[in-house]
Length: 389
Picture 1 (tube, rainbow, N blue to C red):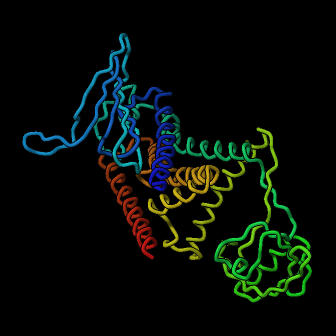
Picture 2 (picture 1 turned 180 degrees about the vertical axis):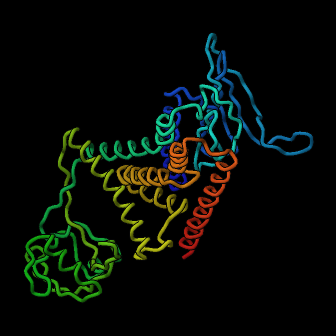
Picture 3 (picture 1 turned 180 degrees about the horizontal axis):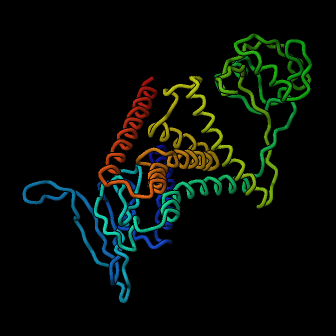
């Protein structure tokens, strides 16, 4: 159940923040928002802003003329006198795998072609106003990542490693643990080479994957000689997947307090480096150093959400920030159906100095949605294969 709740919370926050960016940006330039939905249809709950109050609807299966349909089973008006409603419907939908903001006069995934060119419609706004609205979701996801990274930096401090070759933690089912190494053991020598720092020790171990090494270890007043065969671990490096040696030990890590300003700088650096990691991963995919099978979809995200939630609030929030950066990067790509695709179309119209025909826009949207659907099916199949393997 931890995995389920963590997944719902994770997606709920990321989607709500993203769509809220579009919502406030649209409202800021006078675009009428018809629906703000967290989740994708069918609707589960909705509150509509009307004159004189709010209209609450709860949806479920209902028999209408002998047929079972998904319709409101409860409607209630919440009165608030002299209130001017915006007619915006705020929705909690059943499937927590996305969300959307339906704006008046915008040709989007709903394929709505009713455009009256009123002042409160999306198509009536300037190019810069349109770009502002379309990019606001990406901006909000980026700001969320920056905020989380900064908050964690201020709360936890900056991690520092004690550069002494003393084992602080051991990983289960790894060579060091299996060989009898204990916390507190100090590594004196590896293959008769003196070890004075943790860094010098890791350089030797990392350079020798799947290799039998001779360790001289001090435990209290005892000097022990152990033979440990390193395991191997794949890490990205300069466009290739590099294999390093590991034995499953960790040094002592402590945290130094930092100021709010420094935590903000740290948050900016970590956000930028997260974008850099995505670009680097794409380069590896392009070069063949990584494959499409390494990609993960909703199942992997749910698994990681559950694992990080069980590990603690810091790992969970870190994962949320990283995923928020991924969501921002994906949405800004010039792919039809995504925010970047919408921006790209409007830039093309600006160059041509005329709007594209509605039929052309719809075809582009359909192609984009088909590509995204293919990608979704691919990563889900990879998830399922990985799950059963």
